[in-house]
Amino acid sequence: MPTPLPAPYFVAASAKAAALVGLDANALALDDFVAVFTGNKVPARAKPLAAVYSGHQFGVWAGQLGDGRAILLGELASADGPMELQLKGAGLTPYSRMGDGRAVLRSTIREYLCSEAMAALGIPTTRALMVTGSDQGVMRETLESAAVLTRMARSFVRFGSFEHWFYSNKPEQLRILADYVIDAFYPELRSEANPYKALLAEVTRRTAHMIAQWQAVGFMHGVMNTDNMSVLGLTLDYGPFGFMEAFDSGHICNHTDQQGRYSYASQPQIGHWNCYALGQALLPLIGTVEDAQEALGVYQDAFGASMDALLHAKLGLRIVEEDDRILFDGMFTLMQDNHVDFTRFFRTLGQLQLAAPERDVPVRDLFIDRAAFDAWAGSYRARLRREQSCDSVRKLAMDAVNPKYVLRNYLAQLAIEKAQNKDFSEVAKLLAVLEHPFDEQPGNEAYAALPPDWASALEVSCSS
Image 1 (cartoon, rainbow, N blue to C red):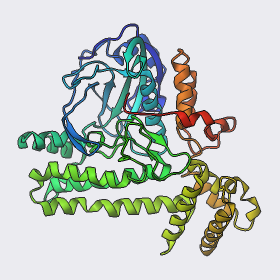
Image 2 (image 1 turned 180 degrees about the vertical axis):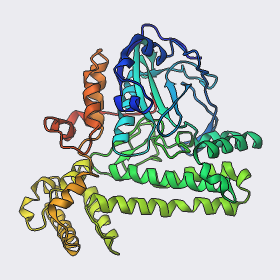
Image 3 (image 1 turned 90 degrees about the vertical axis):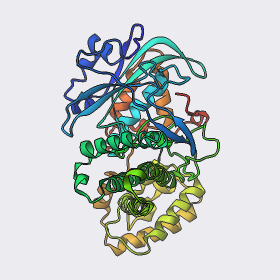
Image 4 (image 1 turned 120 degrees about the vertical axis):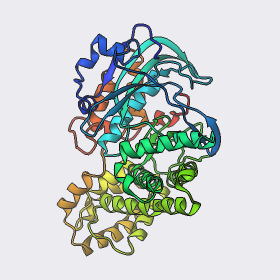
């Protein structure tokens, strides 16, 4: 059962998330909703629960984990089927271990904003319904105030949910869980000759597609432990995440990740590694190592195909040519050498005109080595001419896939600092901007600005 917080108050609510489950976002500010979504009042028909799972954390088997501060209230109907509502930060559970079962306002706002920002980018994700706060103190590196996030998903079952029963040597529970996931979320797999092999293949494929989408917008999860991987291919558990700014393929967004296991460049291979951990857990159901390996074999092709399609779209290329990889590799090398801002580069690249190199200034000025950019841009122009690209049509297509607005760390920090002083206006304003990441939004250009110098000192870690 949730543990009440003293004098809870409304912080924010997502109208788009609320609409998915038939709720009015304006009504969520009322006292009754605040009480329910803080855990102070449990609805009559709710049967709160916390789920057990295990997992590999930073590549090391960590044993039993579980919902240490997440409590499932129940389900509400949505157009896509029942949607689970979960309180994050509502108090102790049987799996809290050494934790306090609480979340803090800082990290709760970050997850709220990023969940909804990712959804607006078209990336599979859990959703964030609302945030409530309380003045009760919670100790992390410093004393912070408590908050509760209500998040939603079709399911919060993780790779680690299967690992738990496998490593506990409980095959019947493993089968029950697998059958539940298949019947509830992948019923089309029930008719396959080996439904469990098909389940592994489908989860592997979805994971590959999701991580390709992360890479394409410069998103870094920060803690890709197996207990943070969704069997539905959703971005799950926003902790020390970050969006790439000055491009560095080796960038590590998590200050806790001293070895760099979850760097931007490593995310694709870590995704594959995590799928192998899931395959190991499902092996008793699948039957043979060969069948499990065949299912896992879909990852590389799925990731490669997704990434290739996304890069062609980001560069406004309609036709695939055999040597396009050379153009892409040259682009990333150029970006790496010049530490160009990831989001701004792709957005301003859409302004390039075939017959007017002199108008390249917005994108060209992002580079220290202008000659190197000119050389690459020459190859890019030649490639565009071969498919008779039209400047205006291409720009529209590129603007539809290259966001102008992403949740930069400094933007989140500014909203958090105001919220810590009980001013939640910037949380609402920032969400409104992030809900339309591909639009120009006259008057909001400041939200697309390069980070200020002080932003380089911001650090995010696992201490949420």
